[in-house]
Every structure is written in C-alpha cells, then in structure tokens.
Image (cartoon, rainbow, N blue to C red; front, side, top):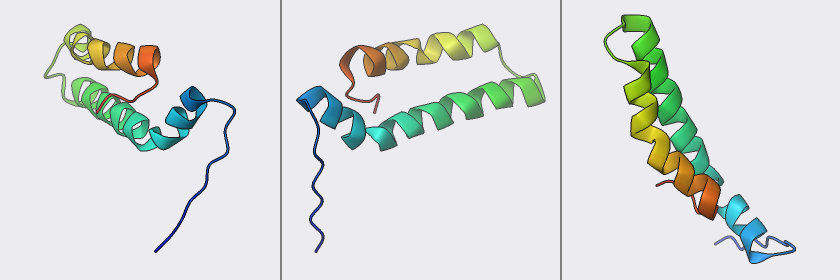
Length: 67
C-alpha cells in the first residue's frame, strides 16, 4: 500500500494535481482527433474543435478535468 501526501495552498490547487491524468487524456484525445483530420483529410477541423469545446471549457472553468 502507498500513501501519497500532496501539500497545496488551496483545494483548487490540489484538484489540479489530482486531475492531471484527466487533463492529459483530454489533450491526447484532442491531439489524436486533430492529427487524424490532418493526416487523412477525413474530417472538418472546426467540427473536431467544436466537439471538444465543452470538455475544454469544463476543464478550464472547474479545474476538475474533462473526464
């Protein structure tokens, strides 16, 4: 068993550290979708960004991650 202690100045700051994996997952999903669009030309970049905009906004506004 592991015990991890994170010392932060606020709960909001702690949430950023605790949700780092969700942020990374969101960025990877965006990257893969944009790359797919560019590489294969089988999608509209505006639609890709529009699809992720609510999740990006949620991550920025709440610092709780997108997923």
